Image (cartoon, one colour):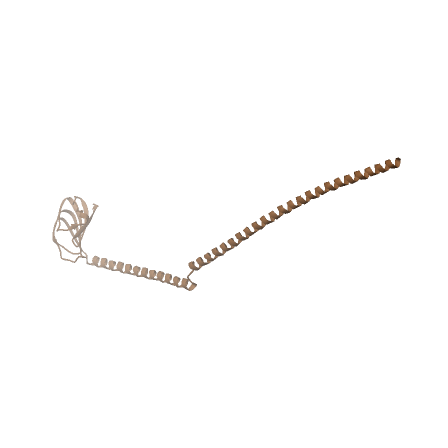
Length: 227
């Protein structure tokens, strides 16, 4: 009886152990399947990521190629522009420099010629003034004065003049000059041959006033001064 009971207990335990092991195996199998499923999912995700990265790499490669092409195009354009902007050789530049120097030299020569001509003109004017001064006759008169013919290049100094009558100008050239220095008295009257007054400004011939008159080629000019 006891032996039968012991056998039964032993068999029950073995059965229980087997059942437990079977459950563990079943549970373990589920875990393995879950792990496999998880692994497959991870592999799939990784594969997708790899494919996405591969596409990005391809896109980046295309961009790099495009940028390289653009850089090459820009470089070529710059080189072409440089070639166009620098078409002159050193010889061309030297030739241009020589031409500029020639222009400068020509300007300097022209300026020297101008300066020389001005000096010559000044010299001739000085000589003319000197000759005029040497040939000028000073005629001094006063009071009531009548001059039948006003001499060429003579300087008439008339003081305390109350009346001046000039009938005519002596014959001369267009370059000859008639000169008057007239100092009026308390009253005065002046009669001259026909002349054109510069600026249509004819003197008023006031009393006690000084007048200097220059007449050249029929044109008269004057200035006044205080006595």
